[in-house]
Length: 115
Image 1 (tube, one colour):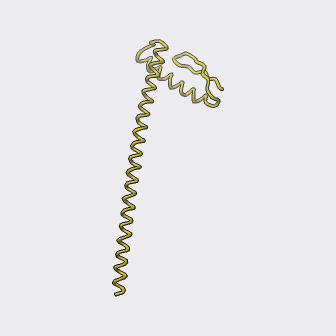
Image 2 (image 1 turned 90 degrees about the vertical axis):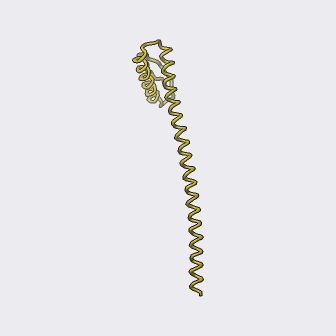
Image 3 (image 1 turned 90 degrees about the horizontal axis):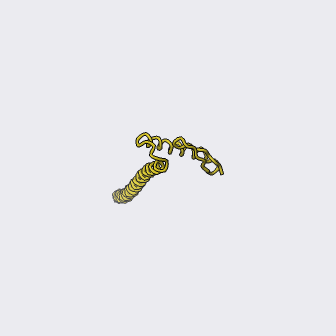
C-alpha cells in the first residue's frame, strides 16, 4: 500500500492508494485542487467543509453529465446497429430475389434453346 501527499487548497493530505496508482491519485488531486481554485475565485474561502462539499457537487454534476452523454451515445449506437441489421436483412432479401429472378431467366433461356 502506497501513501501519497496531495495538496488541495494549500493544505497537504496524506492519502493511501494501491501500489502503482500514485500518479493517478496525484492527477485526481490536481483536478480537485483546480476545481477548488475555481470555486474560491468565484465564492471565496467559505470554509473547508463547505468548499469540499461544493467541489464534490460540481464533480458529481460533471460525472452525471458524462454518464448521460455515454447513455445517449450507447442508445444511438444500438439504434445504428439495429438499422444496420435491418439494412442487412433488406440486402439479403434483395439478393434472394435477385437469385430467384436469375434462375427464372436461366430457365427461360434453357427452354428457348431446347425448342
